[in-house]
Amino acid sequence: MARSLQGKTLETILTELVEVYGWDGLAQRIAIQCFVNDPSIKSSLKFLRKTPWARAKVELLFVSLP
View (cartoon, rainbow, N blue to C red):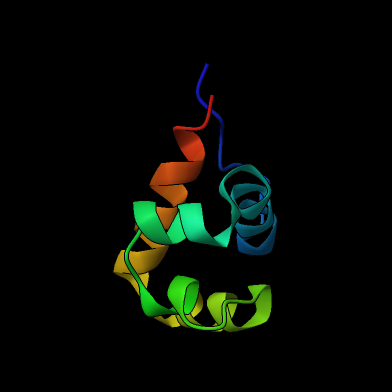
């Protein structure tokens, strides 16, 4: 069953993805610099909040988690 985005903050989504894949695994799945160069939750959230296409990729990856 796919996960739902309902009630999830972007920070929660990103934190769960990092727990599952780690920063390296996340960077392999979504090739954006904030996951490659000195990644952190704070810097990634800042980028994702102002970049709709990147946020959409993160959300899509999250809902596809087993």
